[in-house]
Image 1 (cartoon, helix red, strand yellow):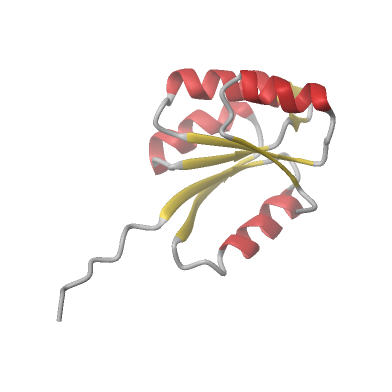
Image 2 (cartoon, one colour):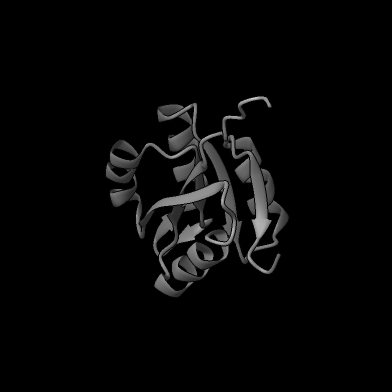
Length: 114
């Protein structure tokens, strides 16, 4: 019988300024054995330290973090961490946000009601 090695789980960092949203996303992703939520951040100031400490494969990023612009954060993250996948997870279905996120290098744009 072949020896199958299970791939390492996908390491996810959740970045959202609402604690209930972070908790809900963490709970949903916890149902998948091939996904591991390795951390959370509530602002761009805490994202860099979480990335350095946790080395996520994927960053789930809200397009608006209080006063901060998630599109610019996505652009900065893609430059600083080209190996991380950035997925925008938001309530804003606006085309300007969508195209801005994709131009910034986001790998996907998902509405929170999916």
